[in-house]
Length: 197
Image (cartoon, rainbow, N blue to C red):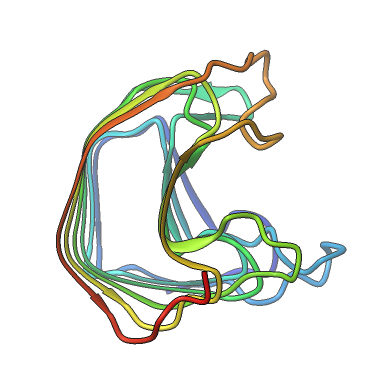
């Protein structure tokens, strides 16, 4: 169990053959950030053959997520599995996120038996949701599979998938693409409360 006050609580940067099991993150309100967010949960960036199972994240930014580049780190994401995981976001961020920084490829990612307890947002909406893909750069995102998805209390969107231009995708010498999103599948998605949008 990891308790963290600010920043990304647990960032796994360009790690291959990663096995996260029974891992818990508590990332409370960030008193050092002007809006109280920027306090993420379990972040996998540029990882291949990675799995995160039986784990939990409580965060004031993205809860459990995949990215391909940030802060000078960059890697092709492939063969990632998230299974039997619970995410609870408050104030900002997405519960289960692919994005925003996707200037390299992302493929063969599976989310199975996942629970988005609460997907919180700030008043100025950022297209946040329980299950999201935000491709804000030039990468190809493909073969993303969702199975047995439970969405309990989305404050903005339940599911949000988009190509978009955003300051979160630009930086570290990255230029706007746009990218591609293809072959996304959903099987057994359960909403327990209707999203407001």
